[in-house]
Length: 258
Image (cartoon, rainbow, N blue to C red; front, side):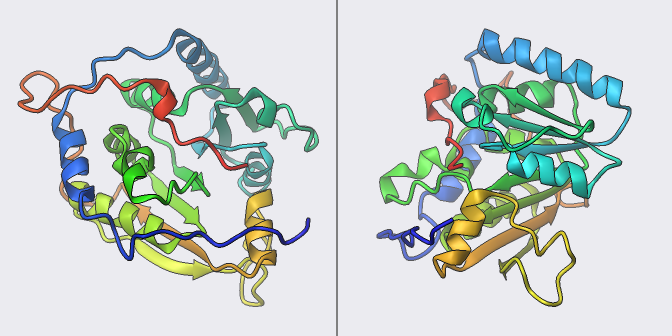
């Protein structure tokens, strides 16, 4: 793969000044729009597959072409790895056969997360690998940490890992987690291939991860254990919220950059 990726540029010099307000609004507001029918059907199929697996779940959210799902399934053979992306074109790309413990699902990720929370899923691990950064200051609401679905992401629990080539994105996400859960997590720079890393850490999980490294960009990683004790402020006050309700359409989903 040729190193041809440009570094992200933005007028922002740090986390968006409106982030905390948006995160709190998402926490305190009810979501009125029902999940799309095609995603509900896809979720039901995924739920049946997961029940048949009899293994802990790893969720690869926004899996793009599914390469990361395959590699995670190989790394964690005792887990069921579920990759979700809304693009049929991305999911249909040939990256070899799926391991028996992996499944790719075409669905709107926003609705899929909400259905997973309603079904009380508790993934052991949850990966968000290189989501679209939407670097313009006016695009905060399109980033996962600025999106109304953010509390649902945290409500799933487990060990969450976010990777991005934009430091501000992971800083904002960490601030959102601290606001809702009181957890610090860990941010570090990440360079696959380091001599002290495990064989799995030396492997590029996604094509974009490889492209960013070959372009000389710094990768950033945020990890937090959402099963640890903090304060739980993720519950939406659906019955008595004094805030406005959310009815945003699936088009607000941050598409995978795969």
